Image (cartoon, helix red, strand yellow):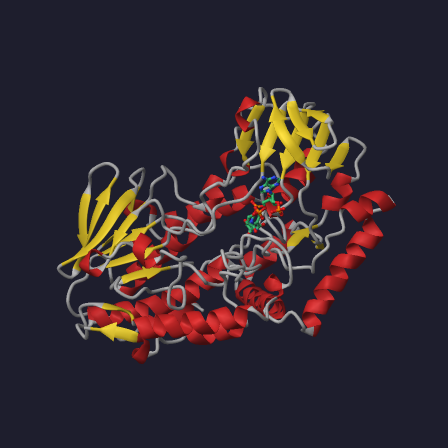
Amino acid sequence: MADEVTRATGGSEEGGRPLRLAVIGAGMAGILSGIKLTEAGLDDFTIYEKADRLGGTWRENTYPGLACDVPSQLYCYSFAPNPDWSHLFSPGPEIQSYLDRVAREYGIDRRIRFGDEVTCCAFADGRWQLETAKGHHDEVDVVIAATGVLHHPKLPEIRGLDSFEGAMFHSARWDHAVPLDGVRIGVIGTGSTAVQITSALVERASHFSLFQRTAQWIMPQQNPAYTEEQKAEFRAHPEQLIDIHEKLSVLFAGFANAVVDADSAEMQDIEDACRVNLEQNVHDPELREQLRPDYRAACKRLIISPDFYEAIQQPNAELVTSGIERIEPAGVRTRDGVLHELDVLVLATGFRADAFMRPMRLLGRNGLTLDEAWAERPNAYLSISMPEFPNFFMLNGPNGPVGNFSLIDVAELQFGYVMQLVDRLWSGECREICATREAMDSFEAARTEAAKRTIWTTGCRSWYLDDRGIPATWPWPFTRFREEMQAPDPAAYDCR
Ligand code: NAP
């Protein structure tokens, strides 16, 4: 894949008119952008980061049990394999350290303006005018928005939430000053986050209550540690890591292909694996039925866990399914009248998935605001470009692949594509480039139609679904995404 990016930028070595660029966000995709821009010889750029540290989601999420459910050898840049991953699925802090290290090694950390949020991007006279929270002004030719998908915590609308007298926080705002050992812990939610927290905290809590509104299918997956011998072998033969990355990429593409076809045999295999996991590993019949979802596996984002069922069956763990009536100073009152007394309450209630790029103000041609362009909902041609927002490109933007894929793979492919658009600006072929309205509309129509065949529309509530019940994600096989990212279709772009 690194080669693809290099190829994409090939031919632009000579360059043309000088370009200044801004990258917004120093998470995984922003760091990638910095590395690839430098390699391409486009050295005049600044990465803007609102926080005082890079890392994006891996900086924001620090909850106990945090891990990536994409294998570590896949969840890393294709050009920067890591022989030192501790596990098949390594914990979050290791991923944060990896990103820190790669940024340092490629000299990208020095290119980041930390602690300064971009508050406004306005297109005027062919350039983007940026304003930051600290009053800094920048004028650039190209903006790459690497602002992330899920980073606005969604707090639950539950009566009395603020009345709780113990410690309470959202899973992405973990308060590490709060003691967890030997106390009564409650977690609201049963998404990927809550499941990881449950596995990590049951053994530490005196009593653990998991408040489940909707049961989840759990895909079993062991998480072996890499031995020191294996790591030494990887260090001696780094080419093995490239090979593993490629093989895992193909494997995950297989999974991605399954979920976009609800009737596929592969989808059936996934459902069977989840059902067997539930039947074989949850012993109490009543608990088993409480944990059994009434919708198809992978309709919600599939949860992968080696030990959630084991944790929730511990004697000090309780699955609470009676529904939350309200929060009280002492704990959570459920609809059956029971008060679940707690010392710590964790809101693992997810994120506002439609809050792409907000609260930044974005104004395209003729003062068109992002709020106007996205009045119905966020969308972008191939997830990357929007009509009337020239020279503004998104990585992991709306409608991209976000399922159980490696978002690093996705961002690398997208960046290779974006660089080909930037090349056209650099060479002087055009001064402004963005997707045409026709390309955007026909992409949107095809995407909406294809979405109806995916597993995500088979009858569940999830953050994938927009206000119409259409999943806001890539509805085709991953191979199609790869193909689309090879080269922009010139007819889809307004180049002037
Ligand atoms: P989520 O999947 O949106 O789950 C939120 C949970 O909170 C759901 O169980 C939801 O119940 C529950 N909830 C929300 N409001 C509630 C209310 N008012 N009362 C009771 N329950 C309520 O959020 P998440 O677990 O943070 O995960 C979000 C995404 O982050 C994942 O889908 C994934 O893409 C990513 N993630 C990835 C990893 C990884 O390992 N790669 C780990 C963590 C997160 P309902 O189901 O009934 O709506």
